[in-house]
Each structure stands twice: as structure tokens, then as C-alpha cells.
Length: 100
Image (cartoon, rainbow, N blue to C red; front, side, top):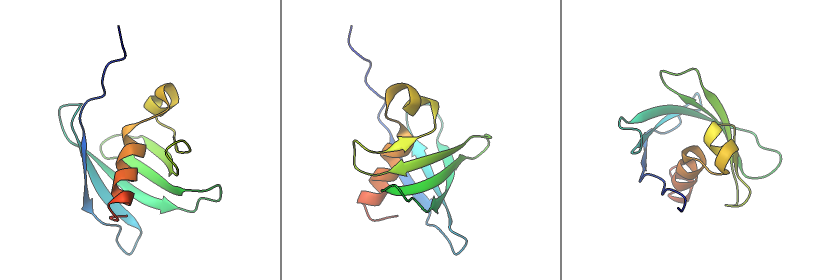
């Protein structure tokens, strides 16, 4: 059997980063209910763009680095297991769409 396909997801910037640097985005798909996250861009000295991402209602804060497709990282369990995750993919999409 092959690897299961990842669920279709969409991401939307709910609130662009404000004067305090904090923004909010929403990921839909895969888990049933939408998931809301805050984000704050962080300095990244090793290339790419760094973000602290916090899922609202949960205690999880992930540090995400979005660089080239083969050079991005996230601290979430999905990325640690599979080498890819919704946080990197979603923030990468927002960056490509020039929303971040």
C-alpha cells in the first residue's frame, strides 16, 4: 500500500500582522474544525523567514522557518516525522501570495 494522501487544506490570513507584529491565520480541512493560529515573525539568521506560531486554545508554540522548499523546518510532530507540515506549507503559501 502507498502512503495516504494528505487532506486538502486551505489557509486564510484572518488578521495581517498589526503594529505589535502579531497576526492571525486559519487552516481549514483535515481535522474537521478550522484551526486558528497567531503568528509573529522572528529574525532568522540562517536563511528564510522565521515565525513563532501558536495554535489558539492549545499550549503549542512552534518555531517555523520557511525557506526554499527543501530547506524549511518546523518543531511540530508532523514535520519531525514526515519532513513536511501544514505550518510550513500554509505560511509558504501566504508568503507566495504576498500576504506576509
